[in-house]
Image 1 (tube, rainbow, N blue to C red):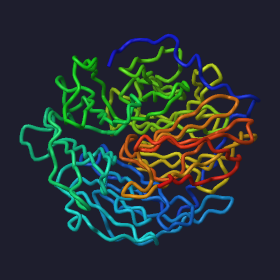
Image 2: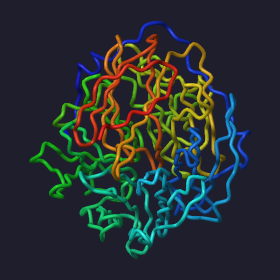
Image 3: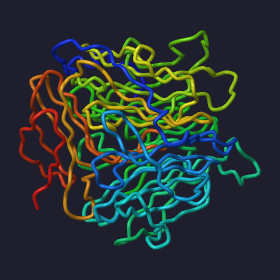
Length: 504
């Protein structure tokens, strides 16, 4: 990794035709059946994630929300034109820090990896938003740590996925909390179960992990973002090769970078097929370009550093958590949402720290519009998700807050552009084609999505890839499948959600 500035950043960014009104959102939290709150003391300062997925196969995304010391909640999407939810009883599951939806066993129903400050869980989905605990049946190493990061991918030929679990401070270490990061684990499959885990050593209190084929070689690597609060001097951002398992270093062009790492977001912003990466932290949020061999920090003028609150008079540095890219006005350019919030009462950091909605402009720069859009909440946000909850083709926002209720923001942006949603399916264990690359082209240019599980901050999604088309009424789509088979270009019409299935 090579810190610095890369001046030609986004000079080939996708240019959308036509002008659109600014983004607008309506608060739908009052439509929730419960005022769900992620709460707890020091043991829940970090964490606080949401899993967004269709748990009953009705094509509407549902929500599993971590509760910390409070019970986790499962909310079933009952939306019409307005976003609404109904509760389902999942028992009194506490100490949950976050969760990731993933279809592990290929039965057509989404499962859940549940991270906790305590033993983690694997829940097998039953297709009706109920679950069976299969942690022991599948030999998943539950542990008893403070888990705060997760990612998953499939190696060729495997029925079950390869998993990475990141653990925060070792609370049992008498010399803690500083300098007492716990062990992180790589968990490989053993047939239709899991083998004993392998330590990812060294480990430095991760708050986000992501398996990503960032070089576009067909071989995913594991990126880990670490919190300097607890590794103090010796830790750094990490990249791991899997076969053989080894950590990248100076010889690979991966020099040490130290930030207060919180979240990872990855998306091709320049149209060259290589994903840029956003790293959230305390202070500067670092958007980095991808050369295929390393990363460079973009210029300050790009507008993505988001280092201080953009409203109010609190000039202290911001604390960024979950970051996620998504085209909020469907103009064909990906925008960036960042969940913000003080860890607790850290006096050196901003207390009133509203979330960011950074809208990408035709020249590739970003402009803050959260206040104008109506979503500039002052709650201590943690995990989040951008997803179309009511099927109107506009991405809504789900935000989980610490010591404040869950927020649902319905996207009501007027004059939004056209859109399509793309689902992938294939035979074998990796039914959702995790690791595939979706390419979509219009007259505006090429958009690329890598299908991943991980990143953000203890929050994950399993569902359609959303593309804004701007003024285009149709697009051509093709898929580079996980086995590197390249599909044919397929014409798709705007305003539809389709499923592309890999030929046998």
